[in-house]
Length: 92
Image 1 (tube, rainbow, N blue to C red):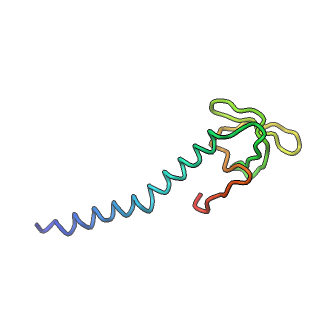
Image 2 (image 1 turned 60 degrees about the horizontal axis):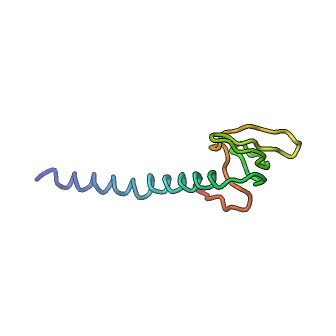
Image 3 (image 1 turned 135 degrees about the horizontal axis):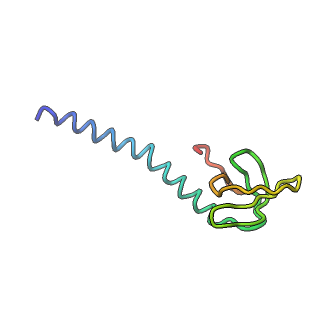
């Protein structure tokens, strides 16, 4: 019985960590995955490197982005932060 308060505190700590840490992170990951799946050729996107470009081709695991200078860049879909016109969550 001496361990009951310790167990309660541990459970509360784990629950709080899940609610404020893990759960929001998973929601952001789901939003990003949906955004990447909804990409279409011609969409203007922002990359993790800070470059804007238009999607010119989409592959299973990568996309080709054409930047303003005309250069084409092949990058993984995870490197796309957002599509133009979409709100970027401050938590990302």
